Each structure stands twice: as structure tokens, then as C-alpha cells.
Length: 318
Image (cartoon, rainbow, N blue to C red; front, side, top):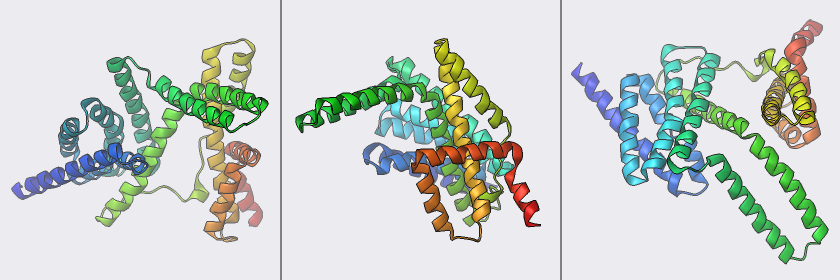
């Protein structure tokens, strides 16, 4: 029993030190720091699976105190509140052997709530809206670019067109801030799920994984949400109901993204064995950067939630 406790303490100390190092890299190393922040929760996840929730929480507490001393208390607190809870949720799902989808959903919901709490804390302490701050940084960067274009002699009508386009994009980005928070939580959750599962498998843990891409099927409720979002956008725009419009646009883009993912799953199913996988992902990348093709694939994926094209394809093959 004492040996187990000593081993838990040793690994907790080591993994807490790793979280601090990763946090320092995230703060002080440009570009690489963004990646470091995304994988910052990984040691916490591994520690919880190997030794339980108590040691994971102690590791988070120790790492938070050290980061507050070495970096800055508010940054450390935001990092702990924003990224530790989803790692703990992932660790709980792995430790209990829950299905991969259930573990991911639980961690995603935890990540979104944690990020909102971290942003709310920042607003309460500083009085600065973090969403507004990000938008102001974008606006300053754009104004700097515009000044450079004017200095280079770009025609005034072109500059005016760029300003108008930016104004519309700027307004849309501000409206889609809730969706950006959800997508940030999803990216963090997916990265730590995939990387954490691979590390734990190397350590001898047999953990449930996601089904192959060909088998991905998202809930049919997303199709109906997509339809409701179109109605909400129409009512919000025509009657100038700003809250309804913002909610509807966020739901529209969220369900469209879900449709695109399901469309990719359909293509994967159809093209499996016909072309190499690297060629498949090149095709997907080309579709993604082409607005029209991406929208068409998203519509295919949304309607697949109702009609299940893959089941029809498999019947025709038989």
C-alpha cells in the first residue's frame, strides 16, 4: 500500500512539473505555444486514469500554484479553470470504460462550461470583455493592413471595398463568438482524446475508441435544428430581433459544420478501397476550401441524417 502511495506521489509530482513546463511554453514561445496550450491537460488526464481523481486534483492544485508564481496568477487561474475540467471529464470516461462518444460529449460540455467560466472570471476581475478585446485586436490588425495598402498606392475604391467586406466579416465574427467557444472546446477535447488514448494504450490500457469514419452518424435532431435556424434567421432579420438572429446564425453554422462532417463520412464510405487515404484527404481539403462544394457536401450530410444513404448504397451492392 505504501509503495502504491509513493508511486502515485512520484508520478503526480512528475506530471505536475510537466504541466508547468507546457504552460510556460504556451506563454513564452510564439506559435508553438498555441499547440502547447491545447495539450496542457494531457498529463492531468493520464494521472487520473492511472491513479484516480484525488491525485489528478492535487496535481492540478500544485501546478496552478507554481504557475501563479512563475507566470501570473490570473493567467494561471484561467488556464486551470478553462482546461483542467475537460481533462478530468475525459479521464473519468476513460477510467470508467465509457463509450467513446459518451466520453467525448461529456468532456465537450465540460470544456464549453469551463471556458465560459474562465472568460467570465476574466471579465469580473478586469472589467474587460474578452470577446470585445479579441475583436479589437482583429480591428487594429486590419487597420494596420489598410494603412499599408494606402501607402502602397492601392486605389481608394479598392480600399473602400475591403473596408466594407471587413465590416461585414467583423460583425459576423462578433455574432458567432458562442460558436467559436464551442469549436474551441471541441478541438481541445478531440486532441486530448486522441493523444491521451494513444499514450494510455502504450501504457497497457485497453480503451474504447471512436468508430471508423465510414460509420460516423450524427443525430437526426441536427437536421431539424438546421431547419429551425433558417426560420430563426428569417424572423430575426425581417423583424430585427437581434438575440434570435444571433442564436439562429450560431445554430446554422454549427449544424452546417455537422453536416459537412457527416458528408465526409459518406465520401469515406463510398471511396474506401477505390483511392488511397492520402488522396481522399487531399480531396476533402480541396472541398473544404471551396465554399460552394463545402456547402453542397454539408447539405448531403444533413439529408443523410434522415435518408441514410449508406444503408441504401449497401442494399444496392447486395
